[in-house]
Image 1: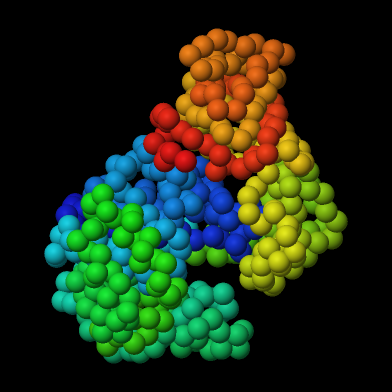
Image 2 (image 1 turned 180 degrees about the horizontal axis):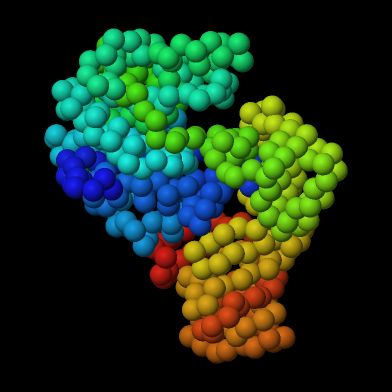
Length: 478
């Protein structure tokens, strides 16, 4: 926070956290996308986004918009910093126009004068004081009834970003927007770098909730009609059912295409706050420290004669000879190898994985949970074997399965088990059996991680066959 400046009590931050992060595959997966990963530093990208808002607004004014499939991940990563009601859940993703429209109606109902700072959950910003200063410069224009974007001064001919062409100045560092420009080819990107009126489109916006609703009504009348029809249900017990009805019939659309490119009330703040959208593996080259040969090496990697390459290992050794301008990413179940100049095509590769039925696009072999993590070791018709690790003092929910039974074998640590009304302990090399339809809970009472092998058997082994009766992590019941 800038010394001497207080947060704006009327400023509400809306974090968009429903993206899939496909360009960061194989580290990012559809069920565990990049905003929930610790790619840069000790905090996840979502946690870092919340942290940088400390100098801008109050925690109770932060709202996170996400999808039903990712809501539990958001709850897990915000339970120490934000209130449980900070999450606004879309039944499913429909791009940014529905998400921002929903947030605007929600905020207007709470506060008719609310200013909304809308920002993605998976970006990286290094100069926090400059970020706060840019927001401060944008407030007056937003309060006057305009839609304000934040354009970043480019420092290279980037082909992976959209651009904003700034027009006439209206005050210091604030300009009218002349046009929005799609991602350019290399020749146009070089021309944009020389022409100081072109800025990178950061995807961060500031406006009054009422202003955005007015513009949606003008340029996206069907979307306005859909959300205005359920405004009374927002914030009530009827909200979930009302949203499911709306989302079953609205179209997916971007707020850029739907409103910003058409509105006559769009301004841009010329900004330089060390921004990156962390949009691909190549983006790490602009953020992280390089070795003398221009390589970025993360994890277990030994390389000979490598230049300008990125190496990421989640555990296994990467060994290479003579790689130049390459990206090598190794996880427990998938490896990506591609030229740096083609990293934007990783999204297309993920689409191909889906088309060919490769499940590695969907979830990682090792899945993080608030209590620890698990990995699927083997899976076949009617059975599945997992390695489960519980943190010290952690416990799973009290739950039941209709379609599967489980056999637990302790590898290390001590397990406290509840099976029906019975509570008992099992030690290393001991085991227990949990029949289907029996309530059960696994807990680690010790000070070291509890590791078990779980053998599941039954006609249905999906995570949707979990009926939760009690959960300390606030996860929804299935």
